[in-house]
Length: 429
Image (cartoon, rainbow, N blue to C red; front, side, top):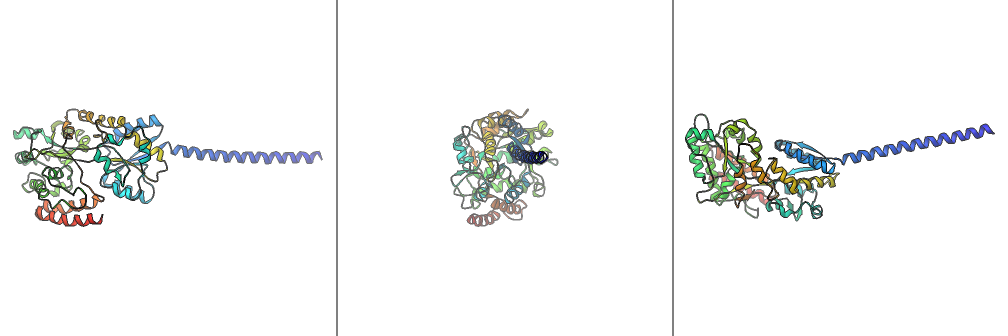
């Protein structure tokens, strides 16, 4: 009897031990799963396309991590592949948590329910007040009454010139009194066997002919975004001006500029003058040749004194299906705050979308006065022309303008073709 009782007690103890051990393994497994879940919430992805901006953004994101404990994995994909990457992510439901959004794409992504609606989060935020940002940039990221991105930055256009080339030609440097006529005259005098006076490139529409189109009173698209502006004589006049540099040999032709952007041509001394957006400044000032030879001036004005700089602005958006909406918003909220926007400018990353925070940007480049980019903001900014599907008609325009740049067709005839095709695309919107 004693042996039987002893055996039964041992059996009970063994079962109890196995049960306890099993429960412990289950508990450990659950704990590990919870820790893994918590760990994933400690890191989120931020997708961008500009490697030049990455170091400054890295510093700002490190400040965010120090404040919140949330790590930020910045993923850089060049512009040419960026939208393909996002489309693949949208299709595969694997979009980055937070990513840069562009004027050309916002309506398509918002309409497709791919972006996180930020209305409630903005309303409860003590850091984000949309009245503090440039109005046009706020509005463009608002779709059907809801906000889908917080403004990141703005940009403006200025004229870069090669001081050495000007000295050799005996010309005074450009200043705020320069007109487009002055620039044309200077380009002719600067053109030699060694370099061209100016760089005129189809794909530099925001930096180039868009500015003169609106300066002359033309338009790219109607205000209600329903009809093309390429049938406006002033629009054709502006395009003819930029095409004339190619026609008279004071700019490289399309065979060169289709393969080389104006930044590379200016950095090599191939062109003496070029219009550059503020987003290219970090690249330009890091180039040794530019450091030794270049200066910056205001974008020229029309003969009647009208000066226009087309401006644009990126936004920070989040994936609608992000597994970490609170963490994604925390990052967007921080990046859009006055503190982070001011630091973005002071680090020389780019001009900021938060009004009054960009003055420090003008002094971030040793040896360069970047104030022309700031000064042109006084009543001279026109927002980037766009519609629901800007990419479709903009790509079409760029393709058709090749015939004008090469002299195969007149600018007037090409603008007529563009108008017809663009109106069809706008009707489809």
